[in-house]
Image (cartoon, rainbow, N blue to C red):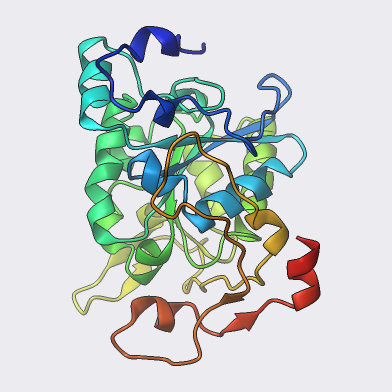
Length: 292
C-alpha cells in the first residue's frame, strides 16, 4: 500500500522535493500490470543520486522492458530518517510511494566504499533484514532480493558479501534485463528464494556470495557443483538514448544535461580504479549521440 507522503513531509523536513518524485522525465508504469517490480537505489542523498548517470541509464532501460517496472529511492537526510523511525514508517520509493519491501528486487549502485554503510541504513529504514542469512527463508513476495552493482561492488564484492543476495559484476545495461527475465520466470514457477538465486547464478556476471567460500589464500571457490567456477565481468556498449535523465525540482550535484560519448579510458593509470575496471575504452558513434 502506498504511503501518504504528505503526512511525513511536514514543515520541519528540509528540502521535501527530494522525496516527491514526478520530475520531468520520470517514468510511471501501472503497479498492477508489472510482473517484476524493481527499485534502483543510490545510497546517497537525492542531490547526489539523482544526478548519477549510471543510475538514470539503468532506470530508463528497465522501464523500457515489457511487464517490468522500475522505481527509485535515495538515502533520506537525517531529519527524514528520524521521522521515519519515530512514526514507524518504512522507507519508500519516490514514484509509487510504496515501501521498499513491497518490491521484488532492490538494487544499490555502489560507486565508492563509504556508500556501504548507507546501504545498511537504507535496509534498516526499509525494515528489511540486513544479511542474506536473515533473509534466506523468506520468499521474494515477503522480502525482496537485494543486490549491488557499480564500480566498487565490481572491484571487490567480498566486504559486502554478507549483506547481498547477489552482486552485478560489470556493466548492467544488458545484465539487468536478463536478471529481470529470470525473476519473472521464477515467480511464475513459484521458485524458492534459494532456487531463484541458483538460476540467477547461471547468468554471466552474477555473483551469489552464499554459493561461494573464501579460501585461506584469498581466492573464492564454489561450495556447490552447480554454479560457475569463474564469474566474468560484463562489458556493454554505451546506449546514449537511455542517458537522457530527469529534470529535478532542486539543484543537484551534477546539475546539467549529460550524455555518454565514451566509456572507459585509454590511459591505464595504475592508481585509477575506474580506468582499470572499465576497459576496454568504448566510443559511441556520433550519429547515435545526435539521435539520442
